[in-house]
Image (cartoon, rainbow, N blue to C red; front, top):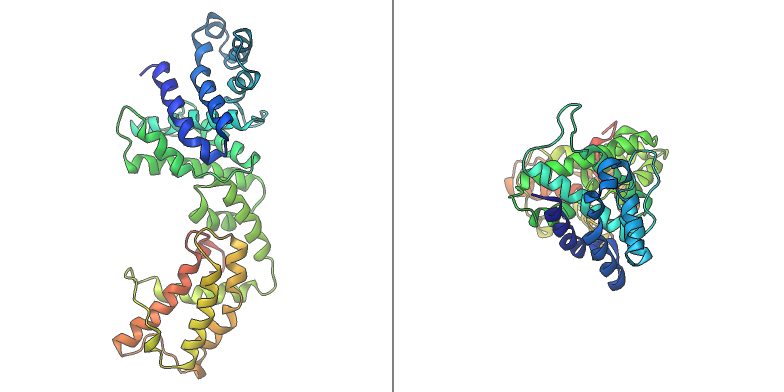
Length: 333
């Protein structure tokens, strides 16, 4: 399609993104006006002759035409950053339009299998993905790239399969991974958080910052070891077993269940890494005692009902980290 087609998609997409970016009604209206005009300067002779002036001339034409200054500035800023060391957009209006522009390109080009291959990236999708990551981190904005791609995919004139959108998301996460590694974070800490939070770059970095502090603790090996016990013994089972506290036979099972229930009250899939690990901390010694010989608990009991119930208990504990962090990616797990 034409750039006009793209512009019309952007006008619709910024409406969907406005609440996700935190725009108020006035800002949403300005963002939609910006989206309407943001590519207009591409049709001018000035930008045809000097392509680096896209956005720069758009801002000037908008001001000369009597557009509001916020719209004119956002026309320029929605392209930012144009390179890794470029300045970033200052306004949330420009941020929203820039996100819409990049999400539309990523969803559309992955949908028709024109993704980058090797070093070839004719449509600048690596730059788009990295620019989106930089902007979300700079604005400290929690934003689901997965949902943004889905919203963009809905507006495309071609079908954007779930597989194509998942591939586009993975592409963005890989740019985020490289960016965070360049910031100096440990590779396994980055991988552990991105496995669950990669779709939300800002919250992912928050999680990585928090986990980076936890892995430096003197008792970290004990914390990780006792969590990993629950994961290792259950990960061979794809089936989720039903937990029935009425079937507990040993005091250690009841004590573990009570400690788990307390942690579950504090943790949801939206919790921070800090909240999860702080809630898990009281479980560490209880898990240790549960697996001790004197507890009388044999997880792989001969009685199938007892065995499944004990596996269910450990599955529930392992699932506390779902949506937050995948600790199995860490060294020493």
